[in-house]
Image (cartoon, helix red, strand yellow):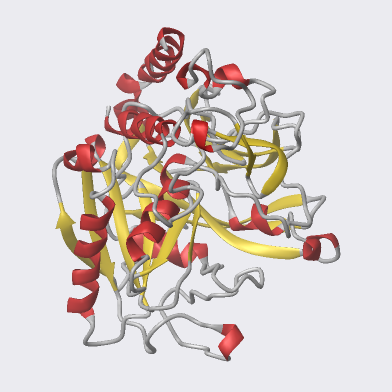
Length: 424
């Protein structure tokens, strides 16, 4: 435990070196870069589109450099004159998920994306990197941004902000923005009620409950023409703000939108760290991608709260799914590489994971039987794979909902670490 605390402290100390540099390199607004991520299972390219100025940077102004090293992609921003790294951030993408599917072996696709950073005072170089199968980052694309560029758009958009829970300065809080999807004209009060319900449900689960006063929650409203998302399997096609749909990648309960740029544009109405979409439907389903966006059905009876907190776990802390899918045809992880997600392991480098939480008398790997029902160990079957990938405990909200009311100690630790990093 002491060793782990020392590593975390050292990382935060390293990031704090950049605390005094925020005002030197950035102002209080934000820069959004719109682009396309394109390719197939073997190749990836990024094509530039446009830059936009948003009213306020809602992120931390101390920890400007990503020290957790999570995500399949990373963006690094350098001062153009000195080549000093002044900002970095990791994330996943819908494109990265798609390229693991059989379809990506036979066709090319383009996915609209966007990246947001503090608005620079001086010219910068922006570098995009992605991991290979061995987990190593490689450059994919780079461009330059000039704050004086006359083509940086500053258009005002017709979205309406709603304060749900404000506890402090966005620079020292985790800021969640909730976006309306599939709410029609006249349903604004319903959306606001669903936002408050989302907040109450999220903060009913530990460790969010104990840290509620470190979060701000805001909503952004825009009415849709039709009520609810698309459901292609039922031939339902609705005209909505964010064009959300079930059957993403032909999986019925996977509810997402491909138009991430519209998501970022709408979110930019308020200061934010993480984006979550409230989809106005009773149909079960959702999705969550690390530092990208999350989504859940706001009206699903019974399971809405657990769906929200599960998907938010992906979005917020980069937590992996801890269940195994026997029907999975693709091995999403290579078993001779330690995955970056904090709650799964291949045991290749278990020291960097939750070894400090495993008792000396607990066998590794750990048998899946009643003797270890609530014991932190190393249980085979996670990350959609039945063999070679291990999870920390037999039951956790990142694995199943039935009879499970909490995150395991490993997921809890990861969530707290993220809260601490953002709120410093």
